[in-house]
Length: 314
Image (cartoon, rainbow, N blue to C red; front, side):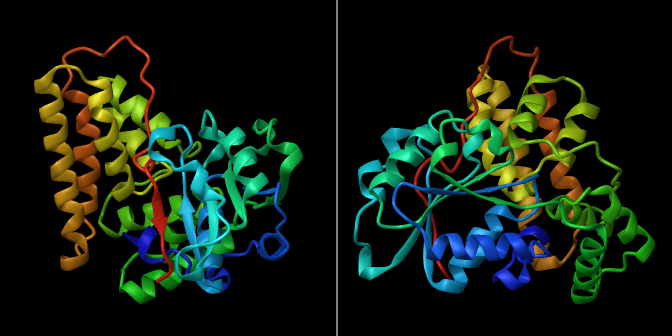
């Protein structure tokens, strides 16, 4: 997957965002207990990548946590003054504006933590409870010329025969969303269709559309426009299919399609056949068709990373 393969390994690898990188570095080095560094901006501009790149570069271990599932999160250990083997840690609340209990938990952890507490969000104005404790770092949309340069570099490195005219279209269509541009490049290199998007869909919107609709076209479009790469989206479906579908036969068929999508994706690195990504995307969208009738109920979708997710430096 290009999104994962070309995830920035250092702050210098992140396209543009010069001011944000400087502010974030300064905020982490000067972090004080009781404050939460909040990286905010549109989807796909590098918020989480900036945290991981900084951690790799400076020797931190990133601990991501979802406080909406307290039974699986040892909150009393997050602010411990020491770490195994003296490791430095960054405590990350990723997509905190999508968490029900995220703001309260971040404030509590930051008040007694010996390590920097960082959060990412699309809209900082939704974080009313956290605003007083926040150290805001804004990331803007990446200019199309920078996206084009990145796509061209990747094509040269991967040997992808995608015309520059297509690269320019993708760079303009992504509206500053690098993650979407990489997903479109992968589809274009496989002969798939990409189009100008209105705006990327959150993973929760994608799940809601695919699991609620019976329209193949709507499901296909939702998978294509999702802010998450396909390999991560598979994990989200795996966590939530059983929460929505109640008929055992529907659940079985849905997970069978999910397994096929995962199988096709797993063959891409070995065979370098990116066209398999098109089939994987199609299998995910077909999950919408296995239900006999849409379920008229509210379903609270859960993150597959709700249990401690550790990003170690490599």
